[in-house]
Every structure is written in structure tokens, then in C-alpha cells.
Image (cartoon, rainbow, N blue to C red; front, top):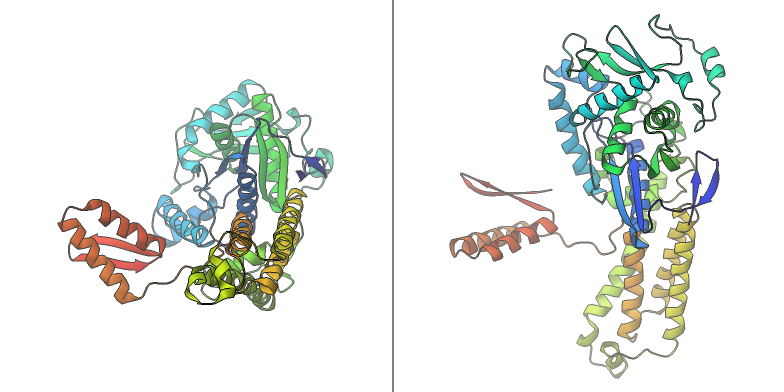
Amino acid sequence: MKIYNTLTKKKEEFVPLEEGKVKMYVCGPTVYNLIHIGNARPIIIFDTVRRYFEYKGYEVNFVSNYTDVDDKIIKKAIEEGVSASEISERYILELKKDVERLNVEPATYNPKATEEIEGMVEMITSLIEKGHAYEKNGTVYFRTRSFEEYGKLSKKNIDDLEAGIRIAVSEEKEDPMDFVLWKPKKDGEPFWESPWSQGRPGWHIECSVMSKRYLGEQIDIHAGGEDLVFPHHENEIAQSEACNGKEFAKYWMHNAFLNIDNKKMSKSAGTFFTVREITEIYDPQVLRFFMLSAHYRSPINFSQELMESSKNALDRILTAAANLKYLIDNAGKVESATVASVSGTSLQQGEEELIADIEKHQEKFEAAMEDDFNTADAVTAVFEIVRIANTNASSASSMLFLKAALDKITQLLNVLGIKALKQEELLAEEIEQLIQDRQDARKEKNFARADEIRNLLLEKGIVLEDTREGVRWKRA
């Protein structure tokens, strides 16, 4: 498996730090609003990377943080007259709804910056003791020139960076390139105690600390959008390696930007959409499929035409899966000599070769994914299996062939985070009947059956709420 490493600017063979295991950290969003479709790209891309590792048998420890203290969060809290924590908790819940609808696997850990302050104070203290940081009037700065390899990720020269600075430089800094690790509170801001001042951490220190706590001092993969390469990820490397004395991450992965109608996303220009807005128009699976239609390191352009194209393409795949499922479910219902073999265990003439072709396209899928996670080519391999199914599957096909085709489509779509078979939506009267059955089961103290019904409804996207007035339900 080869991964393009931003650090070395080339594809490298993936060799994990520990055999059979992958330690992966992905920078999460700042939770001050609903996530936009630009935020969704890395969420979907790196969930797919994680899924492929799991498909190949790796045990993945996947960490993605919430930045829940930030100037934007504080500004919104002041505007609404509420606490910063109320804003961040609100939008963490909304984020969870969006990523669940996008069929993103839950992270192993989703640490919040505000719950990791103690670790940040410890790392900053260590950096001061080692001469890599200093305090001035309650603010702690990282001494950038103390880390000789600064700029190795972004390939930026520190002297060129300093020469290009156009903003006013704080007189407190020893060097214009030094960056903040801790800053004193301002009126009305949330704050925490530290040896230097009542205040809060700088943004960059958060991920260094959370990665270390949940994954250790060295990790396999650190990922995020290409906008994070500098200064965020560059500063993470400097902090982590200066503190720990060892390489921070072996592989750095960055996805390219998403544009709207060939323009940069901009609220003022009307080229800005949240995931919630788009998924009210399109099935969330269509948005996910669209994001995987291009290689993650290539810019991708979002437009209504391209979303319609993705919708139609995904429909072709899902229709093929549904047809296969129908043939399998109805195999024994047709009285015909030619159909008798469908429910049997033998292959029809020519089906052995068809199954061999399906397996070859599975190999092409894997080859695409192992070439720096080329999801575009992987999708093409899925379409080839769909073509084989559409051309050859019929009521005269053997059960072995039908199941082989459906299983492969389902398996490979699962790697891409796409559900091959649509769940049937329950009608309101069906829901009410199941709720009544659950109530009856509880009265009879048959709690296992009651839980079974609740779980069934959850699988169908129905959430139950037990209130004083009775049981209420809503679609998730």
C-alpha cells in the first residue's frame, strides 16, 4: 500500500509502527456552526481511508478532536448572550447528526480541547524547561528557531517567512515567527488556571496534546485539509518533536480544496453551503459518493450538475444491488424448470467465469485503494461488477452467482461508506403499532422484546422518547 506523504512529497510504502495496527489522527472542526461541505470532504475521505485499513484487517485507533474553545465560538456566544460551552455543545450535537447521516464510523476517541487543558499545561511546561518556549506577561510563546527542522512539512524557509510578515509584531516576542502556546484571558472569555496566567491554550498545542494522550508520542498517520499544512501542522510537528524528542507522525495526508461552481467557497458571494442544506435536497449518500468521485489530493468542484450526475451514478449501483436482492428473495417463488437451480448450490454454465471476473474487479478496486486511496478508480471497479450483474443476472441465474455479485457490491460499497441496500421506511401506522407492541412487552416484563423493538426502530431511523405524557417518536 502506497500513501502520498506531504512530508516527503512522494508516495511511500505504508509500514505501520506496530504490525497490524494503525494510529491515525485527523484534525476535527471548530464547533461554532453547522459544518459546511468543505468540512465534509476530509471527514468523508479519512473515514474511507480508515474503512479500507479495517477491510484489510488492520486494527485502527482513529482520533478526531473537537476544537471547542476558539475566538469564533466566543464571538458567537457573546452575540447570543450564552456561554461558549453552550455554543460548542450545541454544534457538537449537530455535527454528530451530520456525520452519522453521512455514514461516518464513530471515532475511537473524539477528545474536546477544553477537557485536555491539564495535558496542555504539562506540555507547555516541558517546552519551557527544554528551552523551546518562554513566557512574557502571562503569554507563552514557542521559540520557533529552537526547532531546527521548522518548515520541513510545508517546505517553507523560516527567514523567507519572517521577511514576508506584514502584520504588526508584538514587542513581547523574541522573534516575529514565534507563536502562542498560552494566552491570558480577556474580559468575558472562558479561562483556566495555569502557572503563567488565567487564560486558554493557543490552537496549535491542542492537537499535539490530544494526539499524544490517545495515540502516544508517535503515530502512523496525521491527516486534514491542505489548508492545515501551514501553520497548524507545521507548528504541531515543532511542538511535539521538541517536547518528545522523536518523530511525531510517519505519514502526513492532506486533501485538496472543494470549490463551488469553480469558485472558492464564500458566504458573501453566495457560494457557501452547509451539509444540512445539501442533504435536505440530496440523500446524504449522494454527497458522500460525490466526494469520492475524485482523488482526494485533487481539487473537487461542487455544482448542481455534478451532484445530479453523482445521484444518477449511485442510483445505477443501488438499483443493481436491489435487483440482485429481489432475485435472491424471490428465487423459490417462480415455478419453472430453469429456475429450479436458483435455490440450489450449483453454478449455471458460464457463471464460474463471471464470478472470476467479479473477483478480478475486486482486485482492481483494492489496487486503486492501495495506490494512495484512489477512490475514483475504485468506484470504476464497482461499476464493472454492476455491469456484470446487470448483463447476466436473471431468474435463471444460480443462487451462488447472485449472492457472489451482491456480496461483492455490498462489501466494496461498505469500504466507501455507502449502504448498498436502502432501508425501507416505516409508515406512521407501522411505527405506532410497534410502539404499542413495545408497551405491551414492558407491561408483561418482557424487557428483551421491548429492547428489540426499540433497536429495530432505531435501525429504521426512528427515535423513541419516553415522557410523562407517553411515548413520542421522531425520525432521526
